[in-house]
Length: 156
Image (tube, rainbow, N blue to C red; front, top):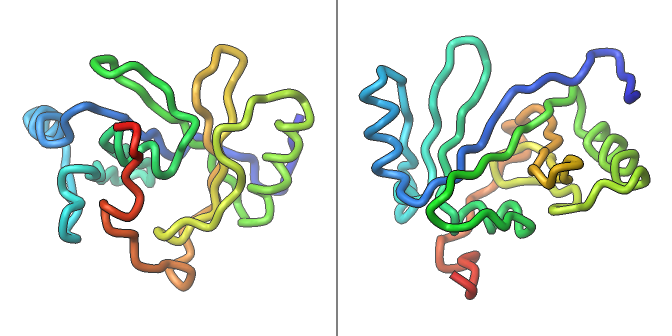
């Protein structure tokens, strides 16, 4: 079992949807506080549910999910998700990723520094579910997100 001074915890779930606007409307109707993307072209691809307890529910389009997780293969018309395990430090993403890879977990995304300021990687659990490993966001490591046309998968 992986051990670190601060145990990993589930801190984020990314819900992959066919229609971000419809999902935003649905979750707002349930009373959730949702922040939509403000960068040009992004509102159709991403929104964040703001939870007071530090937990994050991220709503992502299928196109966007393929940018940050090229291994995502859920069928259109069916929901998908990625459970993120949060670790205390950036270097622990690589450490835990290597451990899971060496134990045979299929890799969907090797460790990478993301534009939102976190380091992350994605592996599969024994049933093929996507499980991310992510560090805290470091605002000093943020950089501008790519334009939608820069990362859109040609398969979509």
